[in-house]
Amino acid sequence: MSDPTPGARAADRIDSPPTDGDDPERPRVVCCLRPGEDRRLLVEWLDEHGYEPVIAEPADLEGLDFECCLADPGTLRAVADGLRRIREREATLVPCLLVAEGDPGAVLARLPEDLATVVTDVLSTPLRSAVLERRLNTVTRARSLSREVAESRERYRRLIEQAPAAAFLVADATITYANAAAGRLLGTDPEDLAGREFVSIIDPDCRDPVRRLIADPDAAGEAEFVDARIRRNDRPVPVEIATTAVDGDTVQVIVHDVSRRQAREDQLRLYRRAMDDATIGITISNPSLPDNPLIYVNDEFERLTGRSREEMLGRNPRILQTEDTDPETVARLREAIAAGEPVSVEILNRRADGSEWYNALDVTPIHGPDGEVEYFLGFQRDVTDRREREQRLAVLDRVLRHDLRNRLNVVIGHASGIEAGEGEIAHHVDRIKKASENLLSLSNAARRFRSALRGDVDLEPVRLDEVIATAAEEIRDEYPHAGIETTLASVSVLANDSVAVAVEELLTNAVVHCDRDPRVRVSLEREAGGGGSAAVLRVADNGPGISEADRGPLVGTAETPTEHASGIGLWLVRWTVEDVGGTVSYREAEPRGAVVELRFPALDDAGTGSGADD
Image 1 (cartoon, rainbow, N blue to C red):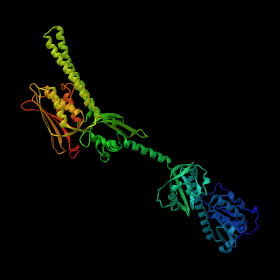
Image 2 (image 1 turned 90 degrees about the vertical axis):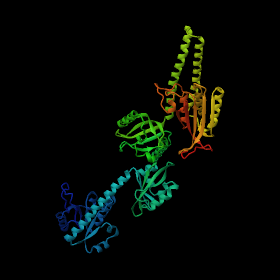
Image 3 (image 1 turned 60 degrees about the vertical axis):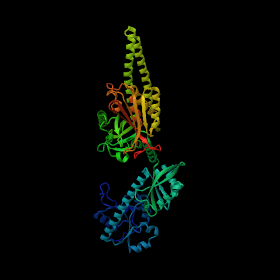
Image 4 (image 1 turned 120 degrees about the horizontal axis):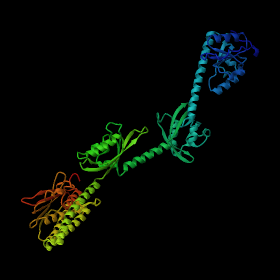
């Protein structure tokens, strides 16, 4: 092939075949060469070697899609302007091979600078098939790769532009690009951000770490953010900033608005603090885990159970139940949980120290988006005092009704006898008088019982020996015929005024129920034990003893509707002693009589609890 001759007319142009049936795998080569035999031969060669030749005028370049342009020295200048516009529009490599005679380097050297920058390579004539094929393969491949890069760049640009996070390109600490989200974040037009120093949008007290991050984008490490604040409408907005080196001095900066997340985290922290500090026990269990274990307990739950978080987390709360826990209550609780239904029960639990308490337990299922139960929320309250008061009130109700009915029956019976004229009036009056005195005594006992039900009275150190001595003196004055002997050690206990009532009740009971001259021996001593010392009060009498039906309060049995003591005095003694941490016991004396023993935790001489557990 020889270099085509100049001076060709446009009418001599050879049109390319129709493009509708073109093979998309054939690279398109635009021939902007002057017409002649050499151009014809070149077009034939391109067609035979897998290329799609297109003959075009330089003015037609911008309307064509092609992989390479062939020009000669006579058409190069006309071609150059079109190639520049295509490159600027596509931002891709648009190869141009110059077909010219002579050494390629010398040809390029003779070209003006503005034309030399357009030429990709020089094809020296006469053309050799192998060289031509190699050059065309190289430039068309380069063109294809350049287009792929441009497409990737465009996809990336669109992604960045449409990304919800604010994105910036920063070069030499200056913003060169900001996407739409960046404009929304800062409340301005993103184009107005170009040319500003990036740290100018950051609060002054946060700028130093951001400036260091931009200067060394890899310093924070992968997927690590710097916390900062920006100003939007003169309002601080918390953000997280991450950087990635792009190329050269350009750094991509991603800024996330974390105000909503921070607000949610603050709200969650508030909820957590409220739950931790709540005055009721709060637990959360996860039924999707084996045995529905606890995954959260608050401080009050720890206090109620005497067990630490570490001990309870990962375990089912049934471990708090005792062998005396009502099985019907347990069954009701389990059935509700198995059915994913809310349930409220009062259940007997045991603390870590072995003490028992009644737990008012409310369990509520928490459902997920699919309607399945994801968690169970539990609320616990200690209602032991309320239940005990209810039990005591029930005892008071039953005993009072029983005793009132018995005494009123006596009054009614003797009043009827007087009305009918039966027997001596004096006998009836005496019996009515005694029944009335019993009713008055019962009223006084009920008043004392009410004071024993108060659960809000604080305990304080009390000299138990002085309380006993005062009560004994009062009983001697009221019952001068009774012999009351006291042997009292000096011992202090934590108690309240009800203890004096209980002591007085015991002494009075020993005197008035004696069927002979009353002789009562009262002793108080301090006994040492493994858990500390105890104040032991013993009241022994010479009476007939306490019947089995009436001694229930002293031996720890429960009062029932069909089986109860005949009075409330001994119940008063039992509950008063239990309220201050003491115990009551009973035994028969030899050869006759009763011995009631009260044991209280004793204080040391300084007025504080004694023993390792105090």
